[in-house]
Length: 386
Picture (cartoon, helix red, strand yellow):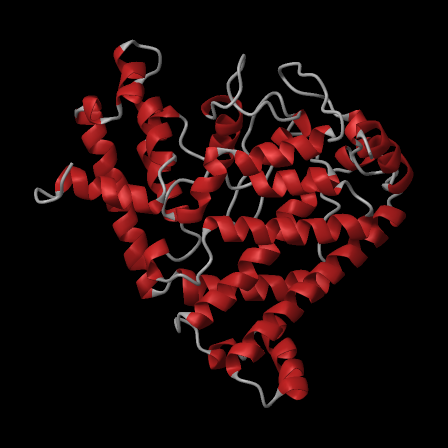
């Protein structure tokens, strides 16, 4: 049997000097005995997969609300794609695949229903209490809200995975400030590549879903270099195939081009800057995980296109407006009459254990799109059974 100590020896021999080894973890907030054949980061990954918040991602919006169609990405399928891309990058760079996968799988646990529209609505409602930010709420989930283990709240993840959640950053996300995770220090490379993998995944699956929904037409992408140069190559090789095949092959090529560019650029940066340890990564003053200048420009062009043509599309904006109204109405109902909450949640308010805004926020943020829509009907449709 390959036991935990064997894994630690394998990590020491196989992983790059700048990778985080499981033997070097800063540990868990609550002491636990080690597992006989799983490392700390493997256990973190498994704890995330088995928690309630992870399962709820199945019915949380990525761009399209779940009832728009069965083949569009949800927050769960997006997370799986991010984890897959992250593992590929980690393996190519000799980083800790288990740690990077755990961070990738946890990166969106704190998202409320209806995607970024839901987050913006909650942020406005909580303006007097510090706002709402899904990285911070993700940390709250793994530290407080999940109840699976005796003796402590949360999942009791290692410090490194929790730091990866807190410092998650992309075009759509901002890091959450927390004194325990020094904001002056860069996150480990395993967390940095999870951030880039998130961007690679959502840019490319949003092209895919946008074309499938016909909100985007292939002709509209003609001036987007990253799409067009790969689409032209696919047509030359598979010109007789149906557009669906050409589209999928183009997306595959874009992902491969971006991952390859990232790996090559990071390899050169690590060598040039003499990055030989985790401390070197943290003290670098900038993220090591970056595209080349050429790929950055192509990526910016693609993101601009998606923002102007997909995220600002009439159908997406109509759903975003509807989502904000639903969350505002739910918030108003629970605020006026907290007893409408489930008994366990209401008891936290009634006993003074937590303020109403905290309980209501946790309850709404934990909803799936489907549950929020059903709850809205139950509260406001007089013909709906409660």
